[in-house]
Length: 235
Image (cartoon, helix red, strand yellow):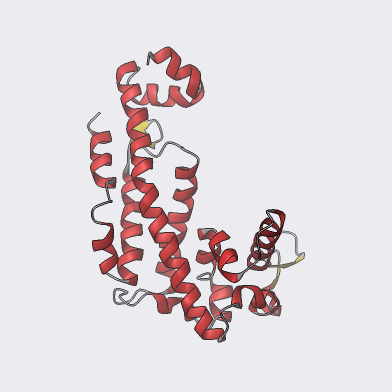
């Protein structure tokens, strides 16, 4: 497809950034744009595996902790509504309440009911984003859960704990949003740079191997991220 059509269909502001990074080469711009898409494509299965494994393992741990397979529904009035989640806003001084987890569960319940789907804990769990699960490693919820979420990680490096896990999950979460919106991940300013993509790839691998090293073997044949990053860097 000719460059003029590429810029027309994908918008000039979007394509112009690629054009600038490639020294106004239309040929390299086309190649770089498609290379970015291929890197995004390569991340999808890894992000999916990481998210499903994290949520299922956390569900296992918290189901045991609360002795309740329906904890995600029943804890709306439990730790998700704990008095300690009230705080004073630093700038305004107003009293706020952190209702993020409870709100996300209630949103999922409404979506299911609107779709005529029977509301079950399994359905609600599958509706939650990575942001929901990563928030369980933030200090406020982590303390309320007595640190139980960390039990899903059986192979943490020495000296690693809640903060390191939280940092990795949040890095993946932010990047995942860019992937889902087909945003460019091959730039640093106006230069071609896939350093961030490489970092997130390491973060995904870290999370999986900290849970179970066998998970890295499981994704070995579908992990094409490094291959596609290398191809993009050679443009």
